[in-house]
Image 1 (cartoon, helix red, strand yellow):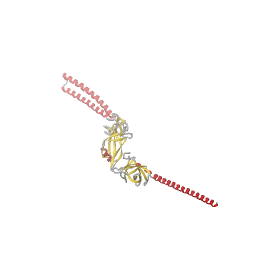
Image 2 (image 1 turned 90 degrees about the vertical axis):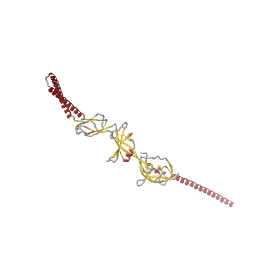
Image 3 (image 1 turned 60 degrees about the horizontal axis):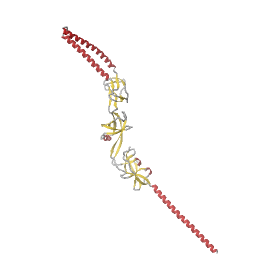
Image 4 (image 1 turned 90 degrees about the horizontal axis):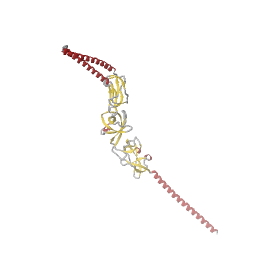
Length: 387
């Protein structure tokens, strides 16, 4: 009885042990499976996290580019005159200041006419005396002619009366001519505006004794304006083939007509002057205003346009451009390039690039060379036309 009870206890303990072993083994297997699945998901997540997305565009190599250059010029009058008197005299008044608008016939300046007025009074008195002599000579001539008919005067006396009348009549005409000449001198002592314009410069002041043709005032016409552009030789040669050019006045863009390109070079600036005519019907320009125009020249230099956002600072004055190689998953490579020319948004570069290379067009600051990326091709809008 006791032996059977002992055997039963041993059998019961053995079953419990086996059950615990089975549970422990099952738990270990389950934990192993869970750990393996978690590790696999972590590796997958790490792989996906290290493969970043990159927007890329294709390098389009070109053999030349257009360099845009803005040139400036000053507005001047197409009809500008240095006005002066035709005779010498003392300048007593200037009726205008620099910048004043004038109309045709307006008095600008005057000379002292006191001497001329005195001479005019003398001539007027001489004219009265000469007219009296003419009246007397005419009466004498008439009496002599009457006496001759009555036999009381000879022919010589009549001839002498005729000669006297002719002499005093000539004296009257001489005095009248002198008075007319003096009147012209007095008129020329007043300087008037020959056309509508604006006073560009006042060259002398009151009290100055001026000589004939001494410039007193510089007057410029405001209805016909022109601008003088200082151009490099290359731009001057290009502009010579055009008839019109768009000019920016600061508030508006207007069309101007090319007048001429000077055949000589400015000694100080070493540039070539180009004259363009500007219609002043709606631009409200005045003499001295500054205008500008943008011209472009072709430069034969191989390279490609890329956005400025695709470039990062490199070494020794060069720039770095990120290029990706591969199809679906690509690695980032850093290529050194030189910026040949840049506008406000784009740069024309040359260096370790080839036609068809894929470059990171934006977001390159998040990437490093050697990084694995998923490249997405986007359309490039770089053409070098932006300012």
